[in-house]
Length: 431
Ligand SMILES: *Cc1c(COP(=O)(O)O)cnc(C)c1O
Image 1 (cartoon, rainbow, N blue to C red):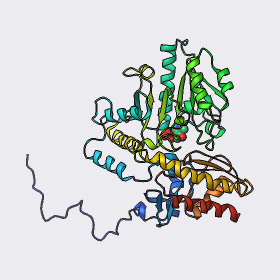
Image 2 (image 1 turned 30 degrees about the horizontal axis):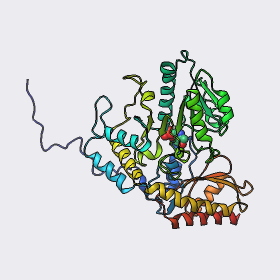
Image 3 (image 1 turned 135 degrees about the vertical axis):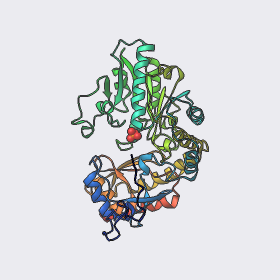
Image 4 (image 1 turned 90 degrees about the vertical axis):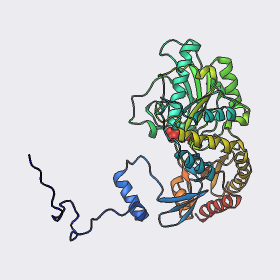
């Protein structure tokens, strides 16, 4: 057998032809205009959102900048996922330094960041044990599973009979089980068949809750303040009443604080306003510092103890990067600074919104730095108001009908808050 050495002077057939026209690679995303990017998104992304027409390319603190360099004050803060603002230096530093060590192990092995994260959450919440997950919906799903298992193993509910009581107007996420107990037709229609085992009672109605409890009841699952419903705040005494009822009737109180928790209302948790501790607490959104998705079920040891190896899990849940960022979030909350800012700026927010009632605003509900503002529908839909605010350089999001939600980063300054409210006033008065 003979081999021929390649002739070094022959042209390389794989070399680019220098006379060929330059390849027409698509321009890098950052070079395309906002309009072109929105068009491209519409062409190739599922239309499950209807975003306001702004294309964010950079953000810092309470401010974002679009592709053309226009600046906007972020008064939504990722639905409270950005309670500490965009790219908070302590959170970016925690993520950056963790990237140099280890980012993912899976729970097949231990990692050196998870214990500290769980200890921090226990200390922050007064509860015992953490189940780390990623998204809010996963935390809700996990809590439903834990409550059902607790009902069978501890309470003695007959097999497959456990029920969970939920409230009207709830928002707990988007999975098939969670939309099964939503009463929002847009969230449900076309997605059946639905998971059984849920009972809906009116929110903020203790008598209805009491009447719905029977020997099959595992838990009551509630948002201490209903965010998507338009920042709906229950009457004083409701959460304390739910706590008392749950203890007396032998059911679990599951508080979904995915949006209301972690400083937003002026306390670490919204249940603290009534001195209440739930049996299971659901955290998400701001727990990931606006950097990575991090959620958790935090609960009583005897309840969390029903889970045994192999019965529940998540590949990414509790990964070292998430745990490092989550620990840094807990550290920020332990300073108390953000809760205090939410209280102080919250009183400015309430004061200014009160002045708008009867002048374009029908009513509003606010707790801490969080408000649902019902705009007079004669002036415009929530969407139209949001678009007009966008033109003024203010980012907000409507919820149902003519309600807009204000939930800026807790790091915003008083001047920034005042200027956002000046813009709201201008938009309402001009109409
Ligand atoms: C956002 C939210 C969820 C769902 O969280 P995802 O991370 O979007 O799955 C659940 N409950 C409440 C109260 C929320 O606000």
